[in-house]
Image (cartoon, rainbow, N blue to C red; front, side):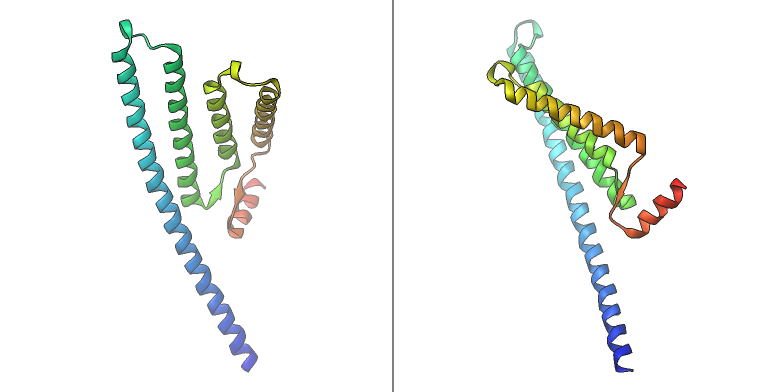
Length: 166
């Protein structure tokens, strides 16, 4: 009888700790959403500021190539932030991490890097490295699309996903 009380006590504490962990996780996720939203608003304002500034400084409203590349970099950074924000929102709603979206964010990040790279300042091995990363991400994205892969952090969600696939 004493063992049953101890076991019940441990189960009750375990359930309580799991609830506390879930609450902490949700608070962190909401905080991330708020912070990411603030960063995206600031980045969008900065992008608008630079566009306005470069157009005013230029002759005939033509932006030079270096400034244009800088603007593309900021624009891509905003797109990456939007994708990350969407990923966080989906995780909050469904408690599921969509691997496809994470790989897509990585592809956008690498594309941003490629856009802002000054190719003349980089040695050949680094260019080959970037090319390998691009190919690896493209293959990963293709394979994920073919398999319909989703990752979940909750065992109940995993069971639901497996049942849906059957």
